[in-house]
Image 1 (cartoon, protein in one colour):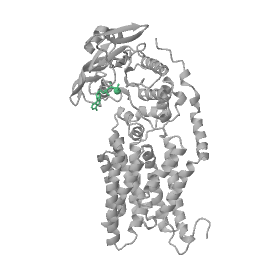
Image 2 (spheres, chains in turn yellow, red; image 1 turned 135 degrees about the vertical axis):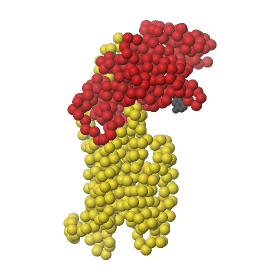
Image 3 (cartoon, chains in turn cyan, yellow; image 1 turned 90 degrees about the vertical axis):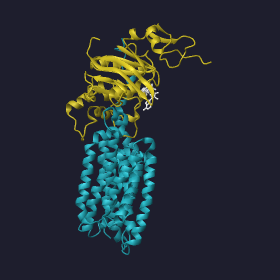
Image 4 (cartoon, protein in one colour; image 1 turned 90 degrees about the horizontal axis):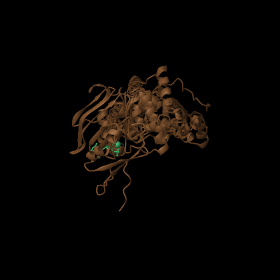
Length: 309
Length: 271
Ligand SMILES: Nc1ncnc2c1ncn2[C@@H]1O[C@H](COP(=O)(O)OP(=O)(O)OP(=O)(O)O)[C@@H](O)[C@H]1O
Ligand SMILES: [Mg+2]
């Protein structure tokens, strides 16, 4: 057994496609994920993965490429949640839950139909948990285009999105339509989830959306550095996951190798746990402390009485 | 009024589901004037601000800003809402929030120029927020947050600053600090301020004019003109006395007409 790279890793076509699509979709998930976490919309993000499952399994049944179904389902789901009232914080969980329930029921139907009527086995496995080594290289341009479009939209609405994520009142005061911005973001989130569904499966795409973002938000003190760190973590995790999955087929020659999704989710989870360790937090806290050290200047002691004639 | 009005509110009426909240409210604010909008809870202060902002349409009446009723309001107005809830986990420093006051409504990622960075630093200095400029906004204390929100509203150099109850939840020392800060800001930046409060005493030393709102109706003028027994009695529809003691005011209803919706009224005895 080789130390790290088993033979053929660098020359295998499916591995190239997997690394390319995996990295691009991980990057999109990470950037969108940072906003998902600061907007406290993780639950909505998770609901979108369920709607993506419905779309993906439906597309499979009708013989369309699952990517279209994943994204189409997610976008429809985003619209539905907006209609049911995801924008109002109080009805947010309710709206999300209603859409999630309905979508999962439909997904159950489609997955049943997929497995009973299609000759292909493993439809369920492929849709729920991904099939990164069997991706058709011809999907690369579509994935790249959708990823670029999503990142472009996020960059376009960056400032209004940021302000309305921090406070809808302050955004409203500047004439920002927080609801429109929120809807645009939900659609971007749907596309991000759809993209990572083809890599690690629709059910697990929440892991890439939330995991790297949540970890990096713990470790950084500004939004820009959070986005950079989340991107690096997500891409690195995905590549390492692909490598380990490829290697795993050599660990036990009788097996097919373990699924990529398992490794990606495991690394993401361990990373999150690690970032929460007291040692790590203290180190980061000290760096943040430097930034905030100037706080010691007591505002109250400033002579402010001038002017109150 | 000697200076040109920056805000003219003319005959504004507004009702929510048949209940009249603002009843023919008219007043003006001149350039650089510090005006207190005084009224008890639920009297329509926030509603009036939303009408001025343009986010709420009145049933009748007009609002003119800078001499025009149709000019884009964003550049002329700064607004500090009554309720701003911020999450301590969001990695946004006070300085970043102030910078969004310059261009938060614009599209794009936005690279800021050196002048813009300088403007942010200057306004942080003006409001005395340098000490916590790098703290996360969600972790600031009430008084610190007010300073940052004032900087956020002020950094784009508006002509009129609307502040909805910025003094609620502050202790007397912070109230005094914020009031003198606003007084200084309105003088140095030539910005008119309309500040709502449910008590006027803390404001009296600093404000130029007062808009006194009760039961939907408003009286406006200098404090001497408005805070008088005749004017307030007419507004309340029954006799109230205005007592002035050491530069402080007490508004007292006559026995039998005691009510708990009079700002700066001494507490009623509980029977
Ligand atoms: N969107 C709305 N729909 C129906 N009624 C409303 C609405 N907004 C405000 N009101 C009512 O209008 C009245 C004035 O409300 P407003 O918020 O303007 O009062 P306020 O003077 O700002 O009070 P406070 O000092 O408590 O902030 C209240 O009775 C309130 O219940
Ligand atoms: Mg109010």
